[in-house]
Image (tube, rainbow, N blue to C red; front, side, top):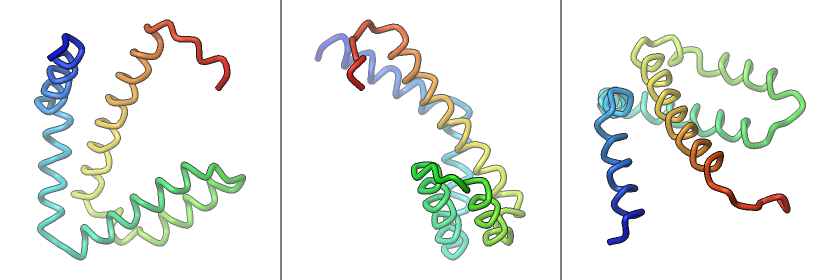
Length: 111
């Protein structure tokens, strides 16, 4: 195993041991006990993700409509907590990615 592979495994283990990741896993498990809620939450997450990818002109209006459509579950404290925990894990992963790209000299001007 190379040193890079070893360090990647250590990084993944550190992430898995973090409070943010453990809270995310715990809340997802709790929500998963209610299959209908989990299905609805995952539909919201998928559509929200798609809106972010598409970057349409009216994305703010589309997001507002989406939140209105799913307000029944978005008002639940468990769902709110889960979405906050998910955002924290995503932020951590984004920060790791940015840190690596900011500190590795690699010419990607063609992108």
